[in-house]
Image (cartoon, rainbow, N blue to C red; front, top):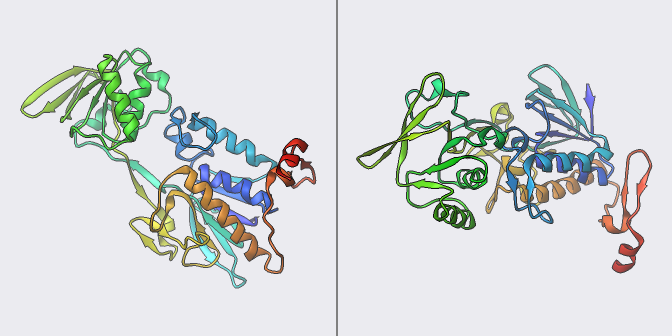
Length: 349
């Protein structure tokens, strides 16, 4: 039986940052994730994709963000159960919980924080008859290593942020990038749309709208795609076809835990992101509430408030005083203390 103060289900960015915030309060964490490594989607789906909206970091690759979060939290010695899915939860007489994985590993904690992101997910695939014949033979639904596409002809389908961002990123790597979207208007961020249009004028990206990829051709691997634009059929030579239509999320077993669910997400109280079951919290993309934004930085905020509430539950007779790390430093579990620089403290005082 693995015992901890806070059991975190999901080792994506929000779950990893929870380790740090809990550690500041002297609370130990253990994380469960179905993936064989920490990082969630940032590691599994787009480790080489740049992220631009992390405060203080103008640009960071998703994989590097994961590494930094692991480094930030390692002083608090979190435990990990990786490659196993949280399957069942049982509430004990004292209000604590036992969570058992699909491989039978049992975890006991008074607080459970569900940080499962989108849950288990499958890519939304276009309706092309023979698309499965070319999977891993030129058809990819996620980009893990952009170097695979160096000096290759790439066709991307989609109109959201992922399609725009990867078209921009690959413009300097692939020999040819063509972006196909079924509408003239794109759904992504305005600056990404403007950048794609700039690259089109520079001849670095081809854009075909309104249109759809309707057929794939080749022997043993992709050799060309057929694009339908109105009554016109356009055949494009291609080494890779990347349809980026988003993910179809599923909560998986967590959906059977008696939690209040709305549109495949867990409803929470925005006071502390607690669910309808006392002691179980949901933070990050897995939760929903009025005004919810599915952003990593919002998950960090939710994790911080959740940890404050968890501390009060675990220490009902102690008064929690908010301390700033610039003043108090960071106290590790090994008794060491990282002091704040004196110049910083003096400036604050």
